[in-house]
Image (tube, rainbow, N blue to C red; front, side):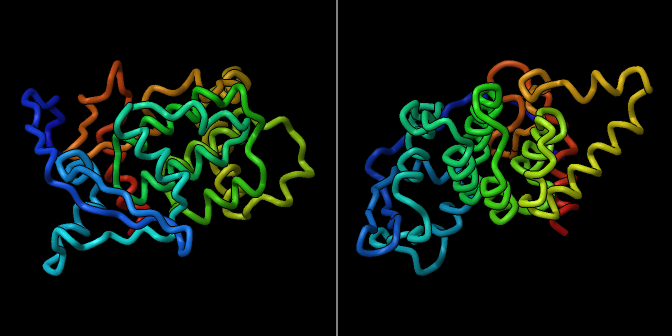
Length: 240
């Protein structure tokens, strides 16, 4: 693993270097013009798309399978380092899940961390994830990804016990919840098990759901980040 050191020199920005992205299916597709020096360093997806031999200044990057509303919320996160208050105000997890999935797809660790911290911060104010939301997460992510880990913890630590609802959740999620339940029971002494299961996401969040890479190391996180340095290796093993 590379040494995680906080960058001390800021990159000079060239605001005339831009590229275009097409978002949304026709006829509602929209074209967005983005600054290369802002988006390419932080997004592995966009950086790879722009580095292709056939890419020119006129080449439009294809994101037509994404929703313009979600993409605009992503742009807000990039420029403001926060989730748009209007976007997150509908009282469900789904908008934030969709926003996180987009940031994760784009390979933008910094923005993904901003979004997942917002999900954790709002976990006390939003009801437990619905079966539809759970299916969305498991359909749009792979084993070991932070959003799956967060959803598992949400069910393990904060589920209200309505067993009837479990029939509609993805089987893979229920198996993951059972594994995490067993792991906690094995790890904790008998007298500590009850306490371990009642620790909320907000109480245990210290960066455990974060992503980090060479462009955005853990040392760059504001405040203390408990991101384990071997977490990236665990994710790579899960993907293998």
